[in-house]
Image 1 (cartoon, protein in one colour):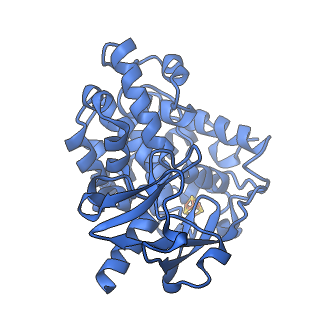
Image 2: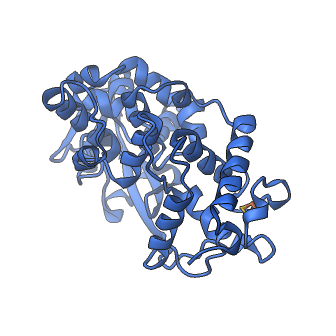
Length: 342
Ligand code: SF4
């Protein structure tokens, strides 16, 4: 499939010039754009995988991480607890565990240097197609096309593709268009530009009137906002969670998280609905995690009650030590609220 507006090499060249010119004038000054250190770039890519740029920057996660672990060596030497604690609040903690494991491999097997070769990068645990391409483009200025959600949305509109993009042949079309349009002489700028125009202009609600590449867009007069079409929409599941808060002598009872995603974290102990029935409800609020929307109910439990007896994987912690402990964000928020309410 090709676009009548992007068929000749002259048209493609004009498209790249329009994109790059816009970018040079409008680019955001993100901290990872001020470096070519492969470590710092990889950290930013993993942080941004499931988290908004504003969270990573404005809440200081990226800067704090690099202050704490400025290179592969310091990260490799850190404990899992320190790593999870620094990632706390960003969610999807497997990213932090993968980065930690990767640091140990880079130090022990690659002399502390991230390999430049694309296939070697891809062979490393935790580095997928997108991350390998991003590091190749932004750290090593190598020509690999980047395909993230912004690029998919933009290309599906440029080519007016009205079939699902999350299954074949849609996925294949997107990759081949991204490869075809890639500026191989300047992949770092081009890749950053196409992603940013997707973020700033070709958003969910596209800003076609100010779009610098609208001359090349086939969908602009045909409801581009309905694109891209997705077959597999993620279904949200609603869950209730009943947890107890038990505080005694400046200590609090916590439970270890189970399951691979949140291994190494602590949370408030959960109990069955029957067990918490006689207790006083202190507060409740909802939080989202992956494809779940959870309503958390928090009950006050006196330490002498049966419901508050520590079960397997539950322990008492000094409240003053909670800052250093990897503690899931909803539980941290619940504890803070409860303690400040009195
Ligand atoms: S013209 Fe509109 S739909 Fe097309 S790329 Fe620009 S913003 Fe997106």
